[in-house]
Amino acid sequence: MFDLDGVLVDSEPFSREASDRILLEVGIVQTLEERKLVFGRRTIDNYRAAIEARGLKIDPQELVDRKLMLFANLIRGRLKPMPGVLKLLDGLSARGVRVAVVSSSPLDRVNVSLEESGLFSRFELVISGDCCRLGKPYPEPFLLAVERLGVKPGECVVIEDAEAGILAGKAAGMNVIGVRSPNTFGQDLSRADLIVDSLEDVDVKLIEGL
Image (cartoon, rainbow, N blue to C red; front, side, top):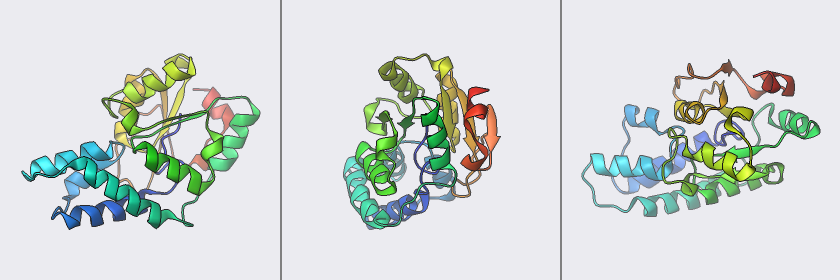
């Protein structure tokens, strides 16, 4: 089970630019601490926290919708799979390994990212942040994925680049590979079963060995 942003596609710079611009329009400039906490978590939860911390009366869903429109424009013709993604997906497909995306991003943003990067058809299942009542770091997104796939948590491997996603995967009873990323402000990946620098370091045998 793959996280999307920062794992499958290098979307974090575009996402950050879109968020900064949308939030600035309503007078919000996130602190460094707030920026560290957003990774791996649902956009609406991050926006709600920023709004509440400042005592503002703004509909967070409206900001989410506006961000999506800007994000879709920013990535057009520019979003590519991360290094190692295509080779790994080809290897998993050749071995008949089922693959899913489990992301904290809204479904529309997940879909536009997968379509723009040419990855949409590669996954059997997509779970987004708006599929669940509680997003990462809670295990609900991963548990929903195994329910829909008809598999057991212990049979699954999660690939994540954010602490929230790693905590969610472990809480769901899954093995987790943490991928270091320069875009995620030095996330604590220590709870992962294995930490790699890139998906170029991951192959089918390594996944099957967890």
